[in-house]
Amino acid sequence: MIDLHITDFTDRFFFQLITIGQELEDLGLDLWYSTRPEPTSLRKRSIDAVFRQMARNPMNKGELWILPNPLEDNGPVFGYTQGLNALVSTYELSEEEVVKVIKHEIGHILGLPHCPRECVMRNGHPSTVPATFCRICKNLMKGRVNV
Image (cartoon, rainbow, N blue to C red):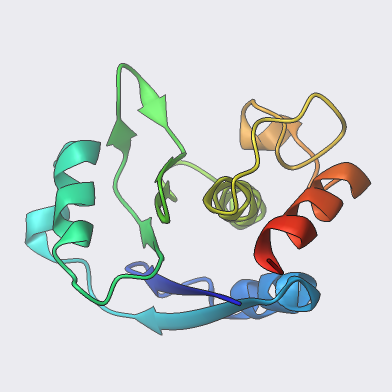
């Protein structure tokens, strides 16, 4: 069982995250969801600075933060994962695209690499990737979570 706490600083994705949780439930992934206003300290911060702030939580088993501001790392970034922590930016993305990025980053938290198949783990702009995991990535996730 892997616990993943999702904090939505935009207060927009509760129902989509319930759906994602149901999709991943059979893998043994527990998603915890909360909303809170975006702290001013997160605005215009580098990705590394935000990850350092996440790491200050001693109870951190895995966190995914949904942020309204753009992420920059030598160009625009939609999502970024470091270990069991991930960031997702909603900046200039539709809700459907944000949900794809959330799934993609959860895949990385579970250890999946980018996938060459028709899969949400394929590298590319969220508008060009499918909304679901391919069969092979689902099987890989199942093997990594239920260890």
